[in-house]
Image 1 (cartoon, rainbow, N blue to C red):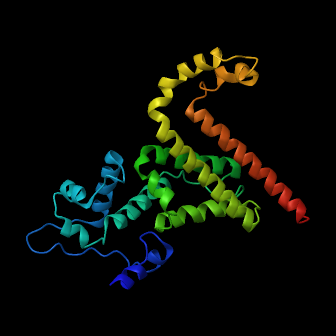
Image 2: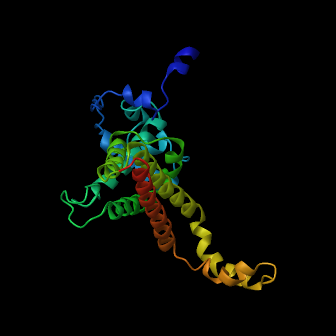
Image 3: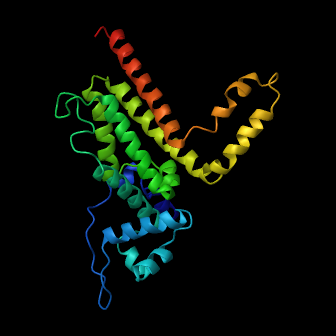
Length: 259
């Protein structure tokens, strides 16, 4: 039994996804209405949005669905499996929000005047917006690499953007992960500090102003600007630095290859 458990693939892992059969709706049995996989996942997401992934449970989900936990186990082996699909459904929202003809299409191929830089920024900002709407999934994205159907589509499109605009394969992979990790890290940091950030802003200005300017001359000069940057402006500023850096990296890579 122990050996069997050791051999079981971890939910969300590459081996787990490779062994997944297509999801088929199963009968709920006599006297109980069926509950679709889509409804289970959507309701689970609502619960995670409200209470977070750690507090989420099968019993809680069953109560929200007006069903029993046995109904859930007909479709999913555990809470962890449901959460894997919750993450993938959120990434599905990102794909659904994608403006047609804008995201991940090389310039000159249906996106006239729309550069890869703008496409990259657009995708990153939309990902950030989705994560802000569903902060409860942030810990799940830290503990797993999202490689479900929607996660793969997002990754495919993201890498394709760079490849289609002259990035070598290795740099395209690095570019995609750098942008994705920046967005995720920023969303996590902002979510954890959002409740106190506004209240501490004015206190920080006063605190910095009261410091000895001879000991902290740089803070004395720029301190009043530190808490005054909005979250949105800070996010876009950092994102632009990354994209500008990727442009320089791509140019240097091509020069090194003699292109």
